[in-house]
Length: 77
Image (cartoon, rainbow, N blue to C red):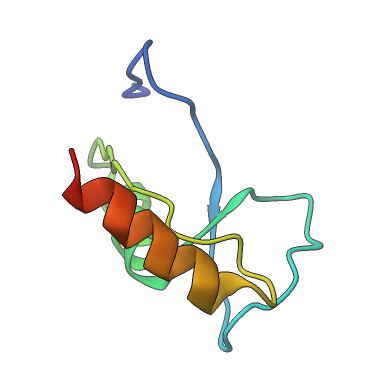
């Protein structure tokens, strides 16, 4: 069973063994090492899994600046 929230966008989570600076892999659109590991275990154990993430940067050369701006936005909510 897929767990989805109709009011939230869905993504496919990927991971890697290094910090991603430029997303060029079309197989996934979210990069998160921790969520990927949890999702992988849930899949192997046949456990439903839903992860909500606040995307803080674009995984590119502006990631540090993006993260700083997004944290400020999040604090104001």
